[in-house]
Amino acid sequence: MSAKIQRLAEVDRVIHEPSRLMVVALLAAVKEADFQYLHQATGLTKGNLSVHLSKLEEAGYIAIEKSFRGKYPLTICRLTERGREVLAGYRKIIKGAL
Amino acid sequence: MANSPFISHATDPDAIATRLMTRAHNRDGLPEIAVGGTFLLVSGLSYAQVALPRGSIGFKAAVTAFSVLVPLLILGSPWILKRVRRRYLMARVGYVEAKPMARKQMALGILLALAMAAVALLAVTRWSHPDGWLLAGTGLFGGALAVWCGRAPRFVAGGALMAAAGVSLAIAGVALEAGFAILFGCMGLASLVSGSIVFLRLMR
Image (cartoon, rainbow over all chains, first blue to last red; front, side, top):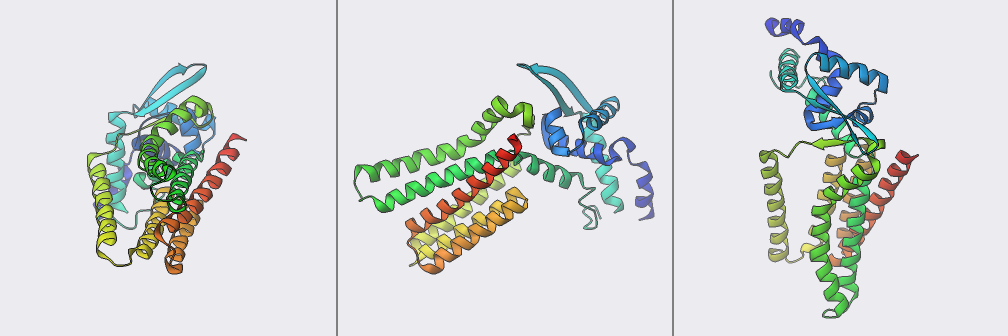
């Protein structure tokens, strides 16, 4: 049991932050989503969401693709394979410990 | 331990994702408007089959419309919702592409639908007075489905209303066709009003 508790120290800090966990959990449930959708679904401010997306992209957990649909700028985000693996590992540690 | 009941919903990514997805899916009220419209159509066509003389052109038209339009609307509404959202609401509510449904989940849904159909068929053919049971069952099942799908207070209220309406109609001994017309009419109206309020609030 104590080994499982001690594994909490190994949780990925990038994903562990609540706002980023929300974004990753949401992206794990869909194929892809745009910035506006994530903004609506998470309730984060645009600036805050933008910072968290950049951190997740830097870590290689999400892929961001910028394009246009007509005049509407589209920032599409999707979870990478690495992101899925890290989320699965995070879940395992948290569920094992709590 | 892997499925510990002590794990908080706040930290379980599955629970977070499901909650966020459901909230986001119902954020513009369009699913409720579509369900409301479908229910009102079902109600109107059920009532037409009660009110019009059997064998008349109107009766035949109502039966044909019921068997063609209703399944078409049910099957086509997700596609219509997707098109409307992408065409008119993308700038406001954003874009999302759902994952294709897992085979296991799809198989479970088909099995559940088949089981429901078998129970309904059994009720109609074997029991002497199945009308009340069918009305109460539809109300209770529909109410539970609304709560499970919506997971929001307004869906809980709608589900409770549907269950209460189904049971009340069964107790009152209303005939099946008329009962379905009243049940779906009430639910359609409630769903349409609720969805419209959500949609108008979003547009403001």
